[in-house]
Length: 367
Image (cartoon, rainbow, N blue to C red; front, side, top):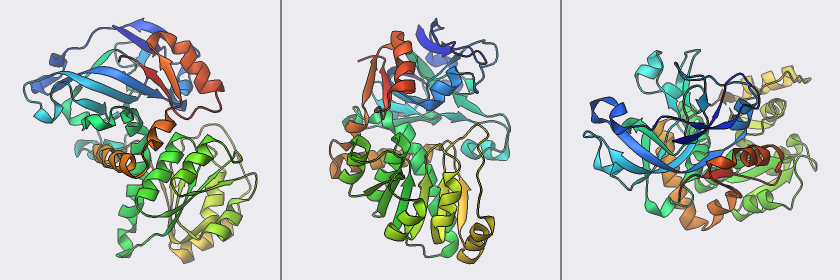
């Protein structure tokens, strides 16, 4: 069976590998689901793993099959799998698997306190850029057939879903929280999907990003009834004066200094959600007294979010369905860049690296 793999720790080691074919019996107690992969979305994580910035192979292997944004079709199920996952059902698998902390033991592995974590296609578990995979039914989420063309967007949407849901969970402390205005920082895939999720919840949304309008991403923002602002035209503080105060800010830029600008721009009783995983050693001068005072006197919250739970994926299915009704065709416009087959892994990396116009790059594994 073919798969796209890397040798962790060795830069530019991406290659087409022959790997063992999985069996539904690989999962104990009849809980196995064998899935034929249809599409896999790829992103900066896959590029960074190929650059040997992080990633580790499963125990016993010297390679890692990459790809964590799955979409496939059930081929076979074990004896104890519910009929919601019958053969032919379209599915997406979640990414993180349980470790050893208390949170892992109660099914909240996305909140693990372990230093070592297990993520398919990222760390210590093989991913989905392969012809087939097998998984425990607990980590497989069914999608209705009407979403077959856009289902590959569910995993990145789940990142936005988790961050937004965490904001609401935190603000239960206020008993009544009625956010009106939100800002999304960044107009990549997750940023655009965060704009979508917030618009579906009725918020006024400003997307603040680097490129100047008009271009595809700004048009997509405006199609949702949101406002697009370029950081080349105004500061975030100016955007807050014009469009705020922001009750919720969702950061998805990959540029860490913007987090402190966002902290200063956040409204009273607001929540700042940080979703970027940033490397490097950037530093910036920060007005610490003003930010600290604003957070204390304004009862503000800053929270980090990573990965997503099954519940976030299920919320994402609901929002995909709503989006297809309220904004027909919008989701499909995110799928800008198709790679035809696992054999074209070099093209996949090239488009991830150099195609500035790509929103979502994805590999077509099987029809």
